[in-house]
Length: 197
Image 1: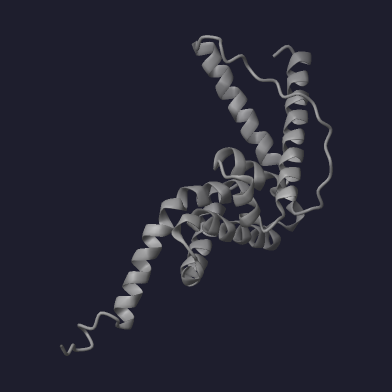
Image 2: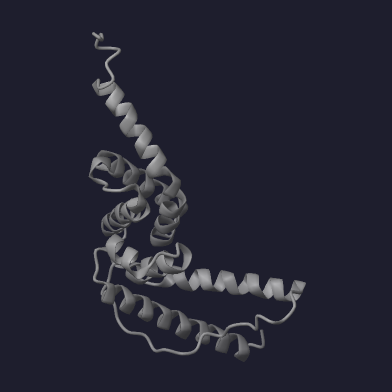
């Protein structure tokens, strides 16, 4: 059978459409995770949207390099992470300082067996807002591993792939980030106790 160029199944346009369809099916379902990571790293919704848009353009450009759709989330988050750090280096270089150790203290956790009351719901809301502020105050290198592990629920191996770090470094950064959060949490609790809040 002879086909005209417009009917040919392998025209550049048809191949481009299939590629775009594949990108949409494989990558776009992970846009929420991409935006979440970018928002936490940039700490600004508009900046996060810009970074994710740039990352999606990069992802589309290099989509043919993705091997296997089961790794699409890690692949996209890796691109978003790189785009965030590039953006931070250009726009807020002071945020990318060297990492240091923090003192470790126990994180105060509310009892899970207590019944839910309006007071407990309000307290939980206040605690969540405090935790969000504390996570936002972490250096980007710590913030990213906390977000990827605790909010995106990725494995250490997936985080290592996204960040291009050894698993041991991922575990160390996560441990140090948690230590900082515990210490800051304890300081906040101590301040509230001193002020009778």
